[in-house]
Length: 114
Image (cartoon, rainbow, N blue to C red; front, side, top):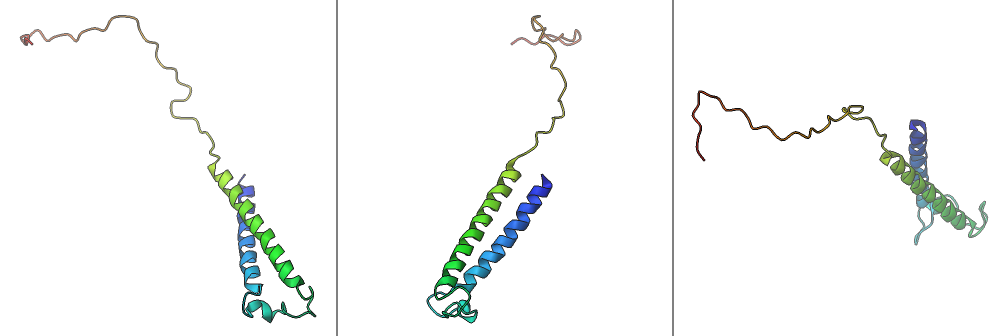
């Protein structure tokens, strides 16, 4: 189970970094960092509007991977193994049916009236 938890953490970090990078690459209202990589030109690898479409889809996919990894880590973290207690395997003493016994009085002390 530790291997699976480690794998989920690694995937979560990679997907978080990918989401950060992809959001920075996308072209906003102004010519942001995405314009430096040719997202505004029609001669780019993805076409005139293809890079924006590709970047938004890739961002959505990595965000989904991030949330799935987060849910998986939470689920694994909440599964607690039930460990046996200190008194496991012991048997409680049986209750006796005898009437309760009053404590014995010390004969050297006089009885105190109520």
